[in-house]
Image 1 (cartoon, helix red, strand yellow):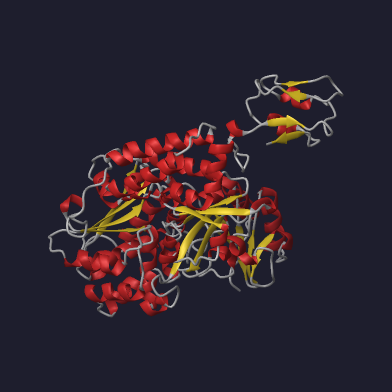
Image 2 (cartoon, rainbow, N blue to C red):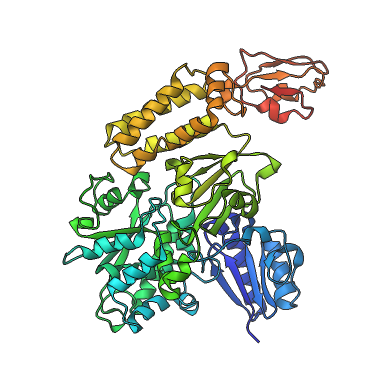
Length: 591
């Protein structure tokens, strides 16, 4: 009989929810009672909204338990591990019966995320036992040369998952064709979009997949050096990458004469300071070289003159993670998923006003509404869906009437948004689209490196206009001025940050122009979100004179005697909302 295995999700999301305490509780019981089961850490399986997660695998099957604390962990060990009686009320997924979370998994195809939440990310043997490094062995045993590797990647249809969507095989072909005594491969793990956590989770859950992909890429283009550029705000990801690198070196999978083939390749982790602009290739390379992270003019392109002026190939985390699977299983199988021009699967991070916040991986071509309403479980609190920001600060808003848009590069771009690296921030009816555009522009304006005048100054002017509008100081012609500035910034900026920074503004104007006009003309926020455009009044019929609102008002703006109708002095009211949130009789009206 196989030994029972207990896995605890110890990615950043699980740890933040209290999984470390759950792990320690289970470990203490195991050691104290000398219980014979295998306790293992694992990464994020994607179900972040149910963290902490504990999975029990025994001879009867697999049982995933959600929202586990120390008390529930003790119950699971005592009933399930000891007595082989699953605790049904805590189960969120099993193959043995249906659960309320089954829709989260329906339609998912795990390729990039294949090992996340399955293996111990700090144990190379776990990775090897699930087929890890088989792709490299296949290349060696079948004597697949560099050109054949590149052709396999090209035939798979894999496009860069960092946002640009450039064909990966073609990118490798350019780097392979450059002649040099030294070449580099780089993994871009500088994930900086608000609400995005795909790369972090992938590294924390399966670091060896990234290493194996980079080794294959290095062999394909003839590189001997590699760098993983990861933002320092990801300490757990960096820790697990460094562990994986040392383990790979011990097994002769990195370093000199890899597996006796005569191929030399080594890599290291470079910690970035968290500059969003360093997600751009040339700014990233400048940062690695010790320079300020600022983009360079192209050409020359990195494939011919990149890091240290040597030919360089850069792909993001998800792209590299797909490579071993493609080589091992064949490009045809990968190309069997997706659409004609967008092959394979895509990982998305679901955040915002959505019930099932977390990670999903779906085939390209799935309708956007299925991602949000089936896998994502719909909108929190039963509210109405309003829009989804796709592509982060560089992307755009997709409104309700475009929810049938399929997830592929061309279809998403046609809406005015971009696929980006895969962040989806879902908004409901309470979201002010003007303020949302202001939020994202505030982010990109602060993250601008300042090299290009239109990006440096233009985004600042746009932010000033948007701030004025949300504060009730909007003027006639502001919308047209925002559109004009947007076009000039897009066409005059050197890198992708400036070229895409206006996208949230342009798409919200395109699809929610009436909200802009309400702010400017009527001095009202339809979503009742912009503080300076709100008015609080007392509904006389509902007011009981309980004085709770008056006691919680920080400026003494609410007047009235006990058990008598109160009123709000608008000259003193600062629109803090304390009265609205404290009133139990619906006597405060927000307009």
